Amino acid sequence: MTGSKRVLLAKPRGYCAGVDRAVQTVEEALKLYGAPIYVRKEIVHNKHVVGTLQAKGAIFVEENEEVPEGATVVFSAHGVAPEVHEQAAARSLKAIDATCPLVTKVHQEARRFAAEDYDILLIGHEGHEEVIGTAGEAPAHIQLVDGPDGVDKVTVRDPSKVVWLSQTTLSVDETLETVARLKTKLPLLMSPPSDDICYATSNRQDAVKAMAPNCDVVLVVGSQNSSNSQRLREVAVDAGASAGYLIDYAHEIQDDWLTGATTVGVTSGASVPDELVMEVLDFLAARDFTDVAEITTAQEKLVFSLPQELKRDMKANATARAAEVAKTLS
Ligand code: SF4
Image 1 (tube, protein in one colour):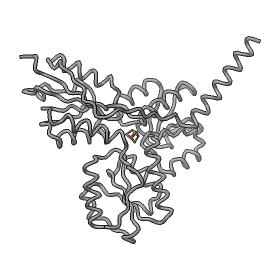
Image 2: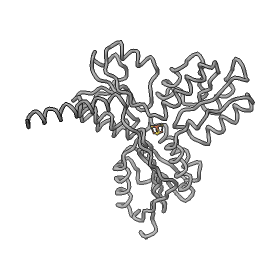
Image 3: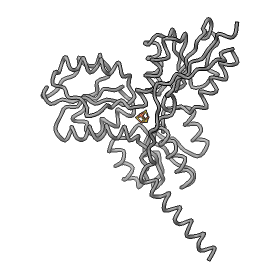
């Protein structure tokens, strides 16, 4: 029996606008300035993307002090605290900030509420780079709430002057639960002016929710340290899939995961190139999962322009080259 095995393929999946911009930033910087280009932290949390950029001449470091004085450094899509910009300036680094504009929006909210002397409850995962960057905007005003169980520990100066913000890549449902618990404790808690969980995170979770109830197994392509990918695996299981697995590459799929399965769901995190998903489909096709249906729950058209500092240098370079050509021809 081979004909009844099918794959449901979630859409949207994979690259979001912020990841696309961050990866392009490193690629364009390599073309413009030449290798090596230093990148502070993983540009996005994906093993394959990091390896590919390394092969092109990017050097990944943990901190600015590992970057030679005067060299070019790109800051990752997850954002950095203001002190990281200050350290870069002190070492005369040429800094290019690839922070996703939707993370920058949360930083701006944090600065604004801190300036108005609010206590800010930042819902997010302890130790995640994005949370470290956002908290660094106003450390004296921000406290981390790591999920619903973190609510009990919250203490505020004035219960009438408190706002919650969040990491962009959380589970939508778990965050609603955390906020509900916070509101029980702090009825005057203010909400952010607009959602902090980004469009890409919520769209990918919605697509998985639509697909998972019909799946025996859901395979999420994404790295272990990718928050949004981890959430997709959890959402798949919560929404009714019998099992969910997070894999970087097709060859990590274990045949016993597919034993007895007739429908396999496939999706990918926001930092995953679609070629890795296609390799998973090839792997499944070789095991008779040949009937592939895309489950589409949203269309995404958002594109972010490259960081200003890079665009300025690209323009200056293009102008200089045009002048050289004109001189040669005259
Ligand atoms: S997941 Fe959302 S916040 Fe993160 S880079 Fe993508 S669009 Fe930006």
